[in-house]
Image (cartoon, rainbow over all chains, first blue to last red; front, side):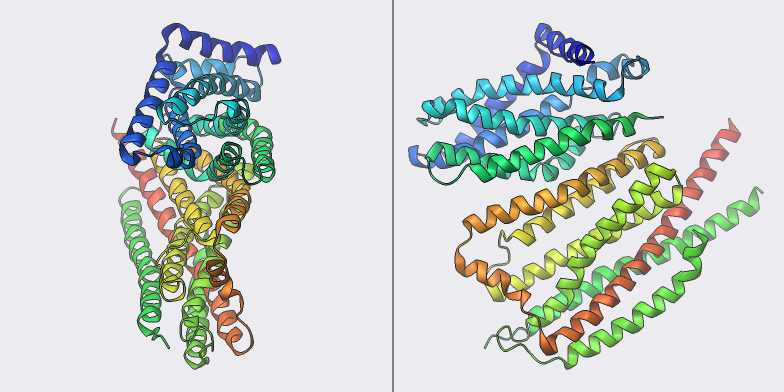
Length: 221
Length: 45
Length: 232
């Protein structure tokens, strides 16, 4: 079973790395979001520290949306989704495979933009980078899990990208709130990080348990 | 003491508009649709 | 669905009567010594907020039933509940905002409950849009039902995260103002209870009306599709 998850995920990630389609558009989208933020706020050094957590999460969220638009795209183009469902693997496994593929790409982009953000906004938080990466990874787990389910839900829908954003943003409000607060607490060394990490874990566990089932229900004929 | 009358009036007016408005609109809509349905099922039994 | 047609006039009449009694009580109720006449806003705001949530619970139960039994009636009720719930949420947000202007001094505060309500409104909107953006109605119904259940699990998490977030950041004066509406007691209570009952009946009536509209329009669509198929 693990092997099947790994195979589905790896097919997506390796295929994408070869074509560099999703990864590079996600990365450049993230960079343009950063440029827009800089132009809109022009923060000085002190403001930048205050803005950075929100900036980082907003960029991650928008970037995730770009990636999610493509999770099922390859299968849609050649009609292979139905074939994938016919394969003798449980639906939950297909879902985990798709999720892992999306998770890996999103994490990769986030890990690249974090140092970039610090450089572009002149924030000195190099010592906190491992902790912040950990928080980002925890949030991204739930974010991409829920996102992959919503991407499956909106497969073949009209004006799908807008719909995906409309559905994902309210549902991930807890992730954004706790993620921003946790990064802010890490960066300023003020305030408690514990409750926010707890909230992230709750969100992750709930969605890790629920989305494979929901996916199974969704694709059942 | 502040006079709250305009605020109170706004809220009651708004509630009337939203609840009453939607109910009446849906009412009119289903009446019309059910009439259409009746005439269509007579045409092609 | 036939049972809906039978109870509809009854529920409608009952809700009008209870609503009239409730409004009479509101008219008679004394002004609160702290909040003055503004307390009258809460007689609309609080029942609307309760109904906004109750509609979501109704919607979730209907969605579970639909996925489980695959009865189209449950799906029609779920679709009706989304529209009715959205209407209650809009009034909750607007009346909360109008109440906030004289009490807090601003139209909008990122108060925990207002924020959760705003998220709820977006969720209702998402449910309505998702259903109609899928071409296959059965797929649309399934996806919407699953989204409703995902949302039902998420709503408590959203609520708690917003509460934690706001209580850690809120200046105390605003926090006190935000809690002022909890103190509804004594002579202020009867109109609230009666209007709450009236709103439950009104919500039920609105669901039956909306459900009839949805049912008729689905029937018409099916006839249309059958005729097109026949002509081919």
